[in-house]
Length: 114
Length: 114
View 1 (tube, helix red, strand yellow):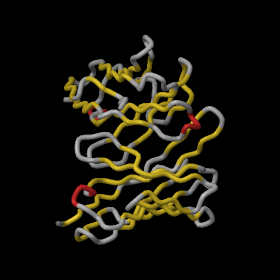
View 2: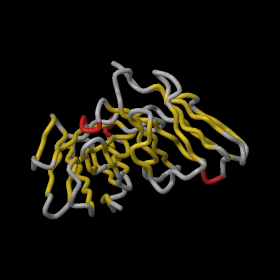
View 3: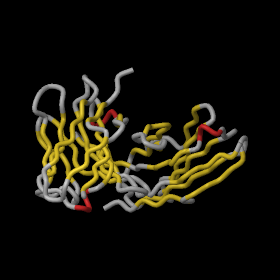
């Protein structure tokens, strides 16, 4: 099965600084690369995603970059705010025909210090 | 905005008892998923369901687990004889199509087996 690793497992940054989380996966067939944010007591929520035919995608302060050759993709958060504090999961997926097979990463706990 | 709902929010049960976790997916969605998250660990895929049948399941989803869509709105996960190690958060998710990519997660049900 897919082996997914995230680094770092915890990350503390000062408010206003940038944060970068890296996700490495093993299945070269994966073709969908989302990042989820999970706040305490809630379910994961999609914050940004990228598909295998795109190298980078940006949405305001959040960006995702993909390197399919090296099998990794990264989440970039600029100008961090206290409300960005949460656990972030990458979840590379294979989407084919009628199904979607998702494997979540181990998670990164981000703490933004005011 | 439409959302996935789950009931109950917290379920306490004794080892060996049967539990049913309920989910109401977003109304026009066709694909349904169950995931679990043991405290402090990553989210793990259990099963996906489409057109009234299981389309994919993980090794975790053994004979003790079953899923059902008893009517047009509910999607349930049944654990026949709970074990201590079944204690976890269980998340339901839904998507319009498997190739719609984004899955919408519910808030989860915390299952505690004593």
